[in-house]
Amino acid sequence: MNLKNLSCLVLLAAVGCLSKFPVVAQEQPFSELVGPGSVGPAPAPGRLVVPFITWGGDLATFHANGGLSTKPGSIFARQGLNLQLTPGDDFVQQVRDYRAGKTPLLRGTFHMIGLASEVIGADPRTKGVVILQMTWSAGDHLVSRAEVRTVSDLRGKTIALQQGGPHVGMLDDVLRSAQVEWREIKVVWTKDLTGTANTPAELFRKRSDIDACFAITPDMAGLTGGLRSSGSGAEGTIKGARVLVSTAELSRSIADVYVVRKDFYDSNKDLITKFVAGYLKATEEVVDLRKEHETKPSAAYRNILQMAQDIYGRTAIPTLEDAAGLLADCTFVGYPGNVAFFTQTGNLSGFDALQKSSLDLATSRGYARERFALFASGLDYPSPAFTSYLTKTTIERGERFRAEAVREDIEALTGGTALDDRTILSFTISFEPNQMAFSAEQYGAEFKRVVELADKFGNAVIAIRGHADPTKTLLDLVRAGSAKGILKRSGTQGNYSYSLNGAPLDLGSTANLLRLIDAGAFDGSSEANPRETLQSALNLSRNRAEAVRDSIVEFAKARGLTIDRSQIQPVGVGIREPFIAKPSNMDDARKNMRVEFRIIRVPAEATKSSDFDF
Image 1 (tube, rainbow, N blue to C red):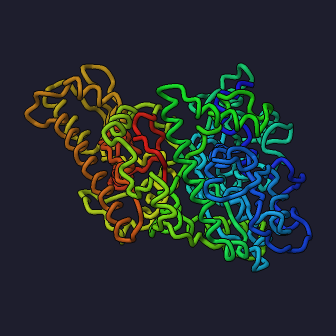
Image 2 (image 1 turned 135 degrees about the vertical axis):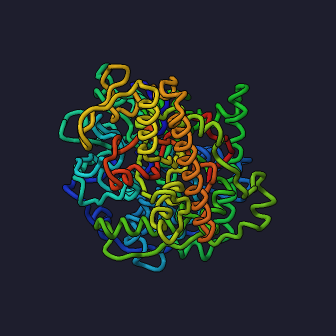
């Protein structure tokens, strides 16, 4: 298999234990996976054992340490640290070692920590303090068969998913975004994430009754041919298989973190500060070296990739290009991201929000019987330990998207199937004739949903598409055509038939009518001007979309919520896509009067680059 974009060859890491989980028919308490054991004392702050997993964010840890043992002159050595990095892909064993006091640290995703929250939170000594957000994932995918077009179509479907793995949280986010309940889907659980016959991707291959599966990038590419491809059936791909949703767009779903025991944190806060600051310094250097390498080969950057291959082994990382792919599928958040994650009010993807969703998931799915909260990092981010040591400390984040490029891209897609192919999720709101005001009192629930979706799908755009009813355009078309003598009507009211220049004309064929109007077939009539009516409907729909966008922005601002205005793009559709092409009454017409929200994948050139994403 070509692992060119390894993307995390083994995100197997993304939560260690994964391939070690026993076969189970359903979710089970995490305590049963870990088994019995006593809580040991926290280790002394000497040579600390620090777990890592197979993930791009851990390459910064390797760089900071200079290898598995702290190398003289390395970032961590200059911070006065002495660390022994050790594999932690077996997350269950990590939790056992953490509880026993062999290491004060846990390394996993936030949702994985949440699944283990009861085990680590039952004793005050081992309660978890989340000290560092490392990255967001951009390399996990939900692959579906051709008939599953958007995430709303998952209702009633069967999904293959690894038991207790990183994708449990991702599926929870996907279902909540589509307002689909867990009870409305069927889950087929697998033991492993990748590399064996008992994985979601392999079940998807073997069983036609499985509609979708979760996969890391190499497995996804083997099923579909690529992130933006559809399987042809050749070269091992599954005909029609495609990526339904990916963390490439659902960019606020899988957060990688470090957690420390509360007893160790309380006694060694200075050491923890140096560890966090050292990691953040390493991310700055890795980001700069990668950018440098893109324009001119960098030996220092190549050394980081080589170190990753040496540590993970050639089975996991066959080539240095695979190591680069591992980095490509993670998004560092840096110092600005950590400040935002732990301290920013209104951060819908911050610590408080992720803790709530992870504990909700753990208790609702049976991994934990009770809620045991984690502690947020209490580090002093404005202190010189960070601000005088790091160079990339700007907290302000500008607009993420190139608004004009996004708008042109969305408008170019309108009118065919291309927009549907790029749509992850859509829903609508209705309005009354001549309505231009959209209040939070009337649409607050929908506005809240849009704000939350915009945050969770941080690398996708939400198009607000205004639609108009075609009734007035149809009436003016008939009047203009009749006045010119080119349109004839026969039959009785409610059952009229029309002909244009002697050929049958279907008033329900919107696309054909639009072509005729654009071609000038009805121009020149003194009775009516359907071209002007059509343009007025388009302008009105665009104005409505803009009014809704402005109302959503004000809604977020009034509640102290963060929203990127460039991510919310208003587009006028006019009468081009009516629900009822030839309305016969006002109820029919009202069904066409709507504003549609679509989460849409956009090309890379539509986004602005930044050192860190948060």
